[in-house]
Amino acid sequence: MDKFTVRTQLTLAFGLLVFFLIGISILSVRSFSTFNAGFDQYVNGITARANTAHRVRDAIDMRAVAARNLVLVTKPEDLEIERKQVLQAHADVVKNMQQLLQLAQQPEVSDEVRAIISKIDSIEKRYAPVALGIVDLALQKKTEQAIVKMNEECRPLLAALVAASDEYFALTDRHSAVILQEDKEHYILNRNILIGASLLSIVLAGLAGWLITRSLLKALGAEPKQLCDAVSLLAAGDLTGKLSVAPTDSVSVLSALQRMQESLTSVVSSVRQDSDTVSLAAEEISTGNSDLSLRTEQQASSLEETASSMEELTSTVRKNAENAREANVLATTASDVASKGGAVVGQVMGTMDLISESSRKIVDIISVIDGIAFQTNILALNAAVEAARAGEQGRGFAVVATEVRGLAQRSASAAKEIKALIDDSVSRVDAGSRLAAQAGTTMSEVVASVARVSNIIAEITVASQEQSTGIEQINQAVAQMDSVTQQNAALVEEAAAAAESLRDQASHLVQTVSIFKTHDSHVAAPAPAPARASRKPLRLVPAAASSPIKRQAAPAKHRSVQAEAVTAGDWEEF
Image 1 (cartoon, helix red, strand yellow):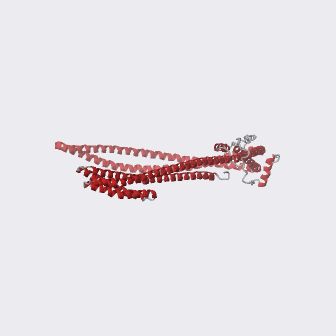
Image 2: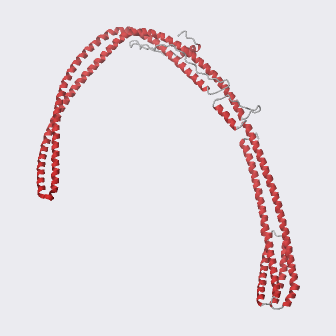
Image 3: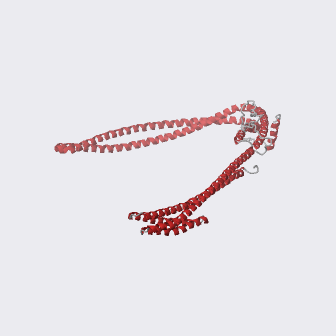
């Protein structure tokens, strides 16, 4: 079974079960078919023929009894009754005999049965005319002849017919017993075959299940749940679990898991050792970088001394710049003041024009309102008079008069608003006067500001001449120190970046490996950052524009040499 795949094993096992199931089903169907055929032969063959033969026998007996009674009775009505019974019995004999002959023609009927049925038919053909002849003699009142015929001819034929019928019934009983015995034997045989096939199927199914289970467990090496637990531990990084593998087991899934666990344990241990080494190297590099930072600070101290001498010069330059900015602000202010003065004058002129135009409009509006008010009063008076004359019919005029009075009131309100406009015009005139006064004041301020600007510009010119010589002397020294400081700063930045990158990579490597647990499990902590001496921030002073110094980056070869020096810890020479 080990050389077959799981799919092949399951296919063969279930295929074998299906084969036996199909065989048992076919055998069962065949048994039922055989039983049904035997039952059909018994019911529609033997039983049907036996029942028909019994009906023939009963009809013959009925005909014989009726013929005998016909000889014995004397009343006319009794004769008629017996005659009808004889004829009816004879008709039943003929009909049932024909059915019996037809049943005898079936293919499964034996020659012996056909011979007996033919014998019964032959006797009936000889007996029927005799019985009917006795009926005729009895109807003709020939009783003695009828009795003689009955005793000499009828009784021997009837006895022969009864004997043939009994022979047929005995043969039918024997055939029925044989068929029942055959069916019983067939049932026992099929039952035993079905029981044997079922037992064989059960045994084979159990054997196949046992073999497949044994093969699967051998291939897996353990129960599926145990394998799942082992894989879950490996996925979680736990390599401390013990997998129980048989010494002879080398091809199972459990054995493969054990080999994978051992390989992972070896890899993780090696990576942890390497990460510790990298952490130590990163710490050494950080220490060297701190030493370099101290040397850079020493270089910066000399630059600070020079910077102190430039502070006074810087303050002077700053003062000159402030004076220049103040002069610029004052000049701008003077310009703005002049602009404001012009704008104010323009506003004054515009305001005066608006006041004049508004005054003219007010005069026109007042004239119109006066006319409307006068006409409204006249209309209201006329409407009131007409309403009084009309009496009840003048109510409409009264309403009109009321509306007209309302118009008069609104006209009065409009007149008040017009008066307010006139007052507003007066206030605008006052505002224009004030704006004109402000314009005069502004122009005076412009003159004063221009004078102050002239004085400040003169002071800036004198200070700039005094500072020119000192700036040129100090700029040369500052430019030289700035070049050295910039080179040192570049080296410090490169070393710091490399150290930080190396420390980050080492820390990330340690954290990545820390999820795995081994028997000698220990989590390697990232290398601590070295303690750096406190130092002042570097101030990089740009070189003077008159003598610029070109800054050059360190070449790649020089950087490689520095990297080797960092690794070796040799920081004696810069």
